[in-house]
Structure formats: C-alpha cells, structure tokens
Length: 491
Image 1 (cartoon, rainbow, N blue to C red):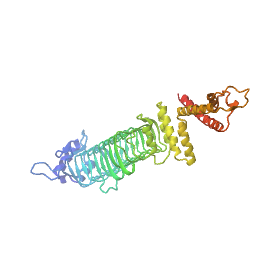
Image 2: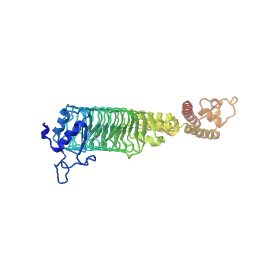
Image 3: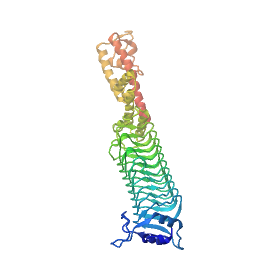
Image 4: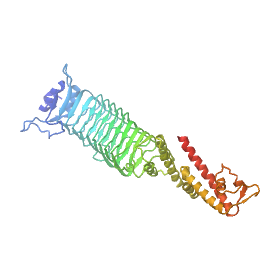
C-alpha cells in the first residue's frame, strides 16, 4: 500500500506509530464508537481506518531510531479483516474502544502485547496465538465465537466484564481449551451466551470468574475438563444456567463456588468427578438445581453446607480429609441418603472419619448407626427382620447403654418370676439358699458365677424363661463389652 493512499485518519495513525504515540478518535476509552463518517459539521476528524493499513504498518513500516514503535488507537472504526495470521509483531498493539466490521484473524501469530479493551467485534480467530506479554479483552463485546484454542499467553489474560455471544448456540462462545496462561485468567463479571470452553487449559495462577453470568440452559455452560490451575478457581456469586463440567480438573488451591447459583434442572448442575482439589467451597448460595457429581474426587478440605446440596448427589469414592463447617450428624446424613447410586458404604466411612478427626465420637457413632440402617434396606426379609431386632435392642452395638437397660429390665423380670416360682434344687442338702436376683444374674451374665444356676433346675415356664435369659444375656453382655472397648480404644 502506498503512503499516498492514506486518508487523514490513517495518516495520523501512520505518523504516530514509529514514536508509539496514542491516537484518539473521540471519547473511546469507555467503548463509545460512531458511524465512522468522515469530517463533519462538528469538525471532528473521521474515525474509519482500514485493516489493511494497520497490517502494513505493523509488518513493514519503518522505525525511528531511539523510539519504541507501538500501535495505539482509541475509538476507531476498523473496516476489512485485520489479518495477522502467522505473522510476528514485536510492537505493542492497543486498539481500545474500536469497532471492527470483520472478524480479526491472529491465528498462529506471535505478538508482544495485545489490548482490545472496550472494543466491539463480530468474533475473534486466534487459535494457537502466542502473546509474550498480556492479552487484554476487558469490557469487549463479541457478537460471534472467540477462538483462543491452544493460545500461549506469557502474562495475564484479562476479560473483566467481557461479553461473548454464540448466535447459533451450537459453537462455543469462547474457546480457551488447551490454552496455556503464564500468570492469571482474570475474568470477573464475564458474560457468555453459549458455552465457555476451558478443557485442558493450564493456568499458572488463579482463574477468576467471580460474578460471571454463563447462560446455556440446554447444554454445557462451562467446560473445564482436565483444567489445571496452580492456584484458585473462583466462581463466587456466579450465575450459571446449564451444566458445569469439571471432570478430571486439578486445582491446587480453592475451587470456590460460594454464593453461586447453579441451575440445570433435569440434568447435572456440577460434575467435578475424578478431580484433585485443595479445597472445595459450596456454601452461602441457594440450593443447586440439578445433580451434584463428586465421584472419585480427592479433596483436602470440603466446605459444603447441606442447604446448598441438591436432592440428587453422586458421591461414590469421594475422599476428603476435613469437612467444614462442623454440623451435627443429622444435618449431614440426608445427603448420603440422596445418592443416586443407592447405598454407598464408603460415603458413610468418609463422614465417620471426618467426625473422628475432630474428636466427635458421638456424631461418628450416629453415622455408623445410619449406615447399618441404610444397609438393612438392601437385605432380604429375614436380614431386615434380624436388623430390626438388633436396632431396637442394642442399636447395632452403637447404643451400649440401651443394652444395659435391657439387661436391667430382664434382671427385674427374672427376679420377680423366680421369686414367685422358685426352681427346685438339684441336691437339697448341698444347695445354697436360693436368691432370685443372683439366680437371674447367673443366667444373664455368662462370665459371672454366683453358684445359683448350677444348683437349681427350673421346670416348665421357668425353664423356658431361663433359656431366653441365657441367650439374650450373651448377646447383650457382648454388646456392652464391645461398646465399652470401642470407647476406651478411641480415647
């Protein structure tokens, strides 16, 4: 392109570039644009700049010795396609508050720095782009797909309050899958109508999606499968209509969904299965609409409030070290009963271990009792019947005091019965004086011998009562000893 072909607006840009001077076409920093008209009655210069001029400027324009060349434009209307595909641009590129008529193409390009703050674009093609500094898409509005698949960004990717739209709803609104970000992904307040894809991305710092609004109610709103974040992934106060898919993600810090609203009725709201997470926070927000899937995940600290947990969960093989906040077992147990996979013993063992780590043995026993009761429902009728007997009498061994009460009750019954109808002695001249209380204790307590049982022989109803007392005595005494032993060993 010849220099003589430039319009006055383009000449301003051309002359400013070698010295890195900014060119402002009106109030552009807030994203305002006009119709790109040439000089008008108000005396303002035209704002239209051809994309071909910018390409030529970046690739072939001469530099001035002692100056740092940079393309800094604010408020321009850029016509044509800015095609920098596979190009190497060592100058800073800042096109803020600009209006692009065509989709820019930076695919495979190598850039020093790119800033599109406040610009309006019909889309962006930047697959495998390499940016040695930062990439700033703050407050941009994209009317079509943004493709950053495989991008390599040495600095931070800024997308604060950016808006992404996929008009047909089929193609993702934002593709960042397999991208590598050397610092942080900073996107608080991001808005997306369509899928946001972060599958396989690697972020050396945090992923900030606080206050984001992701809308794809009929499918996956956020895909972050196998995402790797060396710090936190934050979606505090986020509102998501659609599925959040995080299977296989690795989050070294905190996966924070505090005060978030996740809704995917009839489907999975959050799938964080097979993940390795430092801390998972699910608190403060409304009840999740859809299924919560945490299968096979490994979490150090699980901060999950029961009021956020949906009616359907999948927790098979979920492991965690600490469970916050500390709540009574009855508040936690309904969550385990809501598992779609049915009775999962591992889930009860995990909750038991969490209570034992903080020294709450009473809560741990409640969880174990609930586990046995839940297991009972899976047994055949005779197993359920025997389970009911165990539950009513000794609480499956987790209610040793109840066993003691039964022993005292049977002692009272036996003492009264044998006092009214004492048994006959086997040898009248050798038998000690009969004592109904100690005779009943002899029957009930297998490890104690008061000399009554072996010298007196009941008959009829008394004999049947002695059988009952011996059998129940063995069962109840064993239960009491087991309960006491369990308590002492844990102390």
